Amino acid sequence: MNMSSWVRYHFQHLRRWREYAVAVMRATKEFMPGSRIYVIGGVAEDRVTVLSDIDILIILPQGATVNKARFYVDVLTTAMDKYGLPWDAPVELHI
Image (cartoon, rainbow, N blue to C red):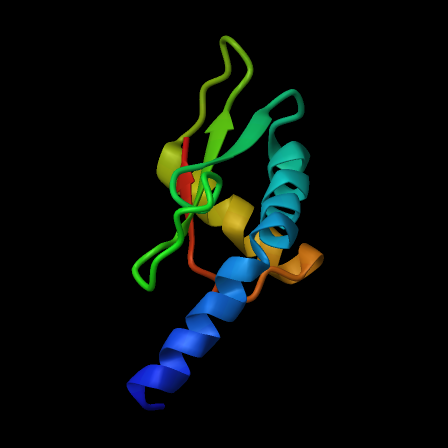
């Protein structure tokens, strides 16, 4: 894939940020009901560049404890397997 093809492909992902956020939200709620999910950063502020990713902030309910690394993997895997998040979606979770 040449650079211009990759750029187009990457921007196609970034345009679908709302869809990807919903997939992450649904997966998160399976593991931690009561969590709040927000899209933050450049994509949320309409400051998208070729280096952008989709930053998703997950706020756990007060008093909840999780192994963050395991939770990260579980949420993304479930979002991919059950809710259609592409494996190569440029999503970054912040827990």
